[in-house]
Length: 429
Image 1 (cartoon, rainbow, N blue to C red):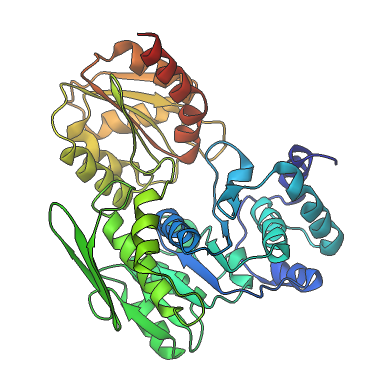
Image 2 (cartoon, rainbow, N blue to C red; image 1 turned 30 degrees about the horizontal axis):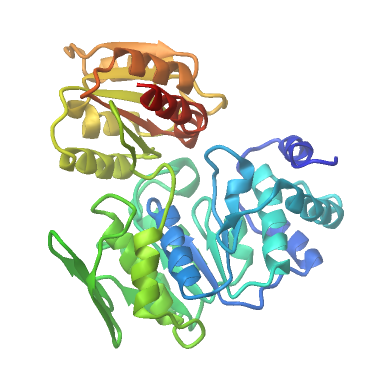
């Protein structure tokens, strides 16, 4: 196995299950690898907002002059997107030796694709000269592979209903799983405005240093600017983050609280905060591609994130028609997602996805029509995100809006091929 593609194919064959939560197997391999970080580690869990929070932490730290390492998942287009060192996506060839290390260390332990790849990326990051490591939890928290690393600061973003087959039937149960990343005596940043009581209880039970939005830090804003205040620190007159959407102030507030909690180890200046928030980028999070028609890309794939997407679309103003390209996993609460956004959509383009867990385009159409039997909204079904997107582009008028949302596979498929094609079309016209 000489290439990253070879190793990823190997990882897919190792374990019969895609997801098997539990740390015993991962911890055993991590101990053989002697995985350890010499720099502060911030671990971020939550239903929505994890990726945005990680991106803001990274952008501010980079502007403060620190060498950063970031692990996020899943990826949109290329696997290498899951790891950034000093702000740059790692090269595929740089990952190969670390896949080899994990293979040698695992011996007879069967790791899932996520567990194996997580250990390989953690191995690469631990070997890099970093001042700050930022780790995004994949699923839940307590039993996620990322949790083999003890964080110096834990951040819990919004907690809502998602992955209920694995995490539990309600916010309290899910919150308890996410609170598994908290550590005794270390900062626990909770940026959910109304967190589950289970998160607060766990922080108090283990005597974590609890920072709650609305109690230990808060934000305020008007049309032009916003301000943040925490324990002994205040930032006023901040420009809004470059990441779009009203919910990004909550994520930014959690990121600032995390950095403030580690100020003695990684101090940041007000200018680094301003520059970092102004320059932060994260593809696929209410990403607006200007042109005619306007294109919006968003990996909203549960009711909470679709509600945020709907609010952000509402704030964009009037468009004669909104065309929606949508593909998602079959186990999602699709009916709740349709209820949130359905009134904004004038035409649906449902797509199959190249993954067994996905709902078929035919199934999506049937579930939409079962919920809205009297709807006159046109519906079409397509074999791939690009085919669905091409149909939307062909049908849309220049003044319309196209939104592509749902699974990372949906947005990634269009981001890889559709956006360059649309931009080329704009240039040609």
